[in-house]
Length: 167
Image 1 (cartoon, rainbow, N blue to C red):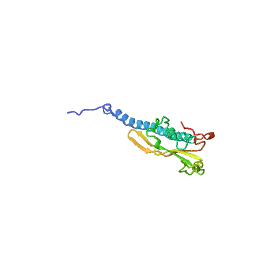
Image 2: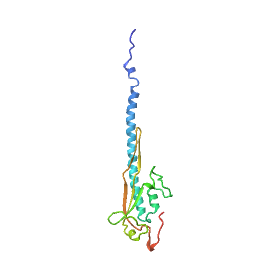
Image 3: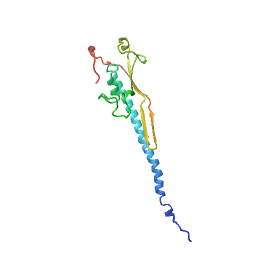
Image 4: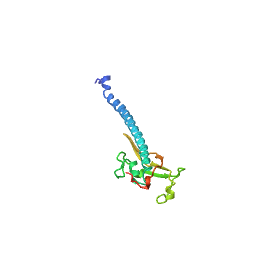
């Protein structure tokens, strides 16, 4: 029996598909990773913008108005969930009223002396969970706190002492 000779061209058949599979897997993972990092940066920017929006609303609205938290999550229709970000709710929004030294003021509801000590408003988004999705590497992590502090303006009281609604 004579041995069967296989040409070098026949021996290489199929290696191109294997090489493409390996290179394609690495290339697509890098591509999806770049897209996901871009999405993470977009989300971080929007969360920072959300705190600015909430703080701007807080300095002109009445103290502890629920519209502040709803505006922070971009939902003024009365809901608690954000229509833009999965998992962002009003429970993630922290609103603090600060004195002239930046210390938090507690017990200002109904206490006129404490109310007049308020000089700044701090709105923060805390405990927001981001889902990082890359094929083969899916994880979730809690983002850093995003906060904005602004000096007070009217706190919901307009000239003449009339109260306003924050809508």
